[in-house]
Length: 414
Figure (tube, rainbow, N blue to C red):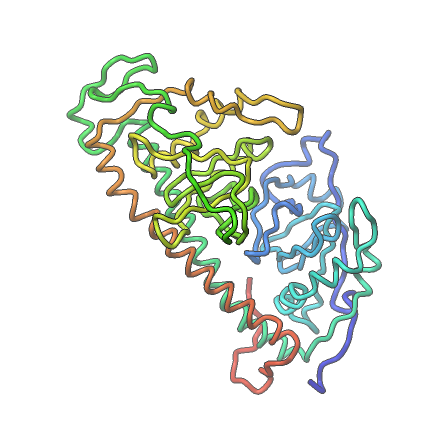
């Protein structure tokens, strides 16, 4: 620890505050450079997937605000202390201060992990009441304690090993989820299920469908908000709206709470957001995190619980993910602008071609292992994050001394 020293954030590199190009000039937006906003950043991942991208013209519009790979981005307005790293040249909006690390003296991955331990500090120095803000000058003057560069790289190597495994598992989860979506589309949209060559198509109110299938209302095939009892006083899993993501079936960051108001659900139920803009954004989760199938959890009142009645749970989730299912729900929304909600009766008006039981059984036996693999990888990631987060403060503070450990301390490539 004698070799550690105090520095300020701006000693680590150049601090850059982001900027939002005017949306009136559509030519500034495209599909080339990630445009990072606080909602894109999650503390469960070092990298970020953005909703929006800038074009070359938009990227060049503010050349002094551009970020190279391995910049460390920190939210400093409203949701203070969320952190990510850039993987490729990127830009951020004005709610984010970023550090372009001087890599001759400091390791960017170490800086990322260092700032992950400073969320509470950043929140405590924020000014403003309605909207907390850490000004650029305040952020740049924040003091931190750092070891020599070789030790920085060793600490970063240990922690990055966990995040690399997490990111690899996350990539595998994405592949499995894409496979599930593709199978659903092939079997039930394009009607290319096993043996389809031998099944004639017949007319229906929705157009040609395979013989033996029938047109059915969603409410006849799916229980909508089924009655499920849960004790009030004991602590049990609680799923807030933020725990259902827009890109995955996984339900993350489950809390423990007492109470029993809101949505109640079991394993293999689908949670379908009913409020704007969560519904439009596609927040839909598949419940498979409960230890036992008889366990009951509860969650936000803004979820609609979908439970299989005549289908199978995997089909229900994948159906709920389709654009036309969601658009049917959106059309039913009522209420004040910005707080509109789905009317549950909309599922009486959504019709789909219901497969025969043999096809449903074949689909379940094919798709269930994919869902289980997703859940197994998710559990591995939870364990990896827990171990990483236990080590993080001990390594960053120097409580665990790695200076003499035989660890590769060459710069980590992106």
